[in-house]
Structure formats: structure tokens, C-alpha cells
Length: 132
Image 1 (spheres, rainbow, N blue to C red):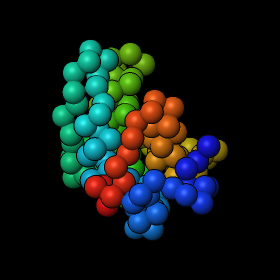
Image 2 (image 1 turned 180 degrees about the vertical axis):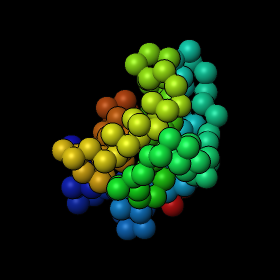
Image 3 (image 1 turned 90 degrees about the horizontal axis):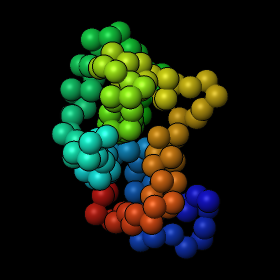
């Protein structure tokens, strides 16, 4: 259940959503990626927005739903969860980001909504005020 549907939400959540909507800000993305581990349990090295853009451009990937830092989050999620299994290299990572964010059956807030659902399911507390 989405937390933003309730009258009482965690402190700072309303402010975050008023600034960013259901999308990743730079700070929220950095925090989320800091919690990720690769398939071997190793912490991911954070790639910048510019580095992600360069990777996407290298493989001629253009996004329709390019909002905030969503693509940065999705790229790191792909690396953490799929690289070395169903995703074998950087080209397929770029294609995954495109498929995930521009899914015709999806919606523009899918990355952030999925992230929030995962936090709820795992009991991960988001300190919203710290991430504005």
C-alpha cells in the first residue's frame, strides 16, 4: 500500500514528494544505491548522472521517461540484481534501463514506486527529511 495515500505520513515525506514527485532526487538515489550490493555481496560504486548518460549514449539508448535520477537508480538496480546472470554486459544494462523506464505498460513513477514498495516490504526506514 502506498504510504502517500494515508493522511499521516512519515515526517518529511510530503516535502520530498512536493519537490520531486515519485521520482529520485540526487540525494535519494545516492542513499538508495548505498544500500545495494552486487550478486557477490559487494557494495556498488556509485556512477554519476553524467556517467549514466554517457553509457546510454554509447549504446544509442534514448529515454522517453527520463525524470530526475530515476535512470541512475534503475541502472544500479540492474547491476546489483541482474549483472552476471541474465544481464551480461554494459550494453544490456543500458537496454534494461530503457525497457524498465519506457515500458509501454508501465508508468513514469515505476522506479520510485517499486523502491518504496521494497522499503516497506523489507522494513527499511527512509529518513525523508534528510533526503530532500
